[in-house]
Amino acid sequence: MTHTLAATEDSMPHAAAHGETCGSEAGHHHGYITAKDSYLRRLRRIEGQARGLQRMVDEEKYCIDILTQISAMTKALESVALELLDDHMLHCVLAAARSGDDAEAQQKIKEASEAIRRLVRS
Image (cartoon, rainbow, N blue to C red):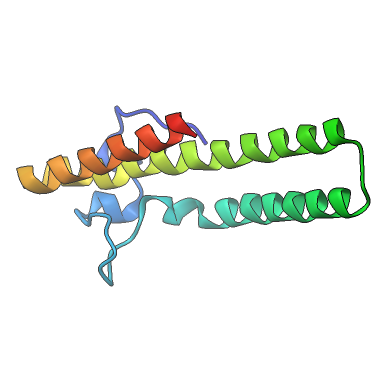
C-alpha cells in the first residue's frame, strides 16, 4: 500500500472525503480504517513472530538466529508504522488542512512530526 501526498478527495478514504478528522472522538474514522483487515493480518503475523522468539529462547537456540528473527520482527513493525503514518498524513492531516481550522491543522502536523521523531529514534 503506497500513497502519495498529492491525493485528491476521490482517492482519499471515505471518511476523509467527507471532512471527518482523526481523533479519539466517537464517530470519527481513522485513516487506516479502509485497510484495517490488512493491518490486523500483519499484526497477527508479527504476534506469531514474537511467540516464535519466545520459543527460540525457551529452546535455547543460537543467539545470532534469535537476533536475526528480532531484526525481521522489528522491520515488520517499522513497515506497519510507516504505513500508518502515511495513512494518518493522507487522512487526518490532509482533512485538518482542508477544514480551514488552522489550529487543528497545526496540531495534526505537530502530532505527525512527533510520531516521525519517535520512529527515527527507535
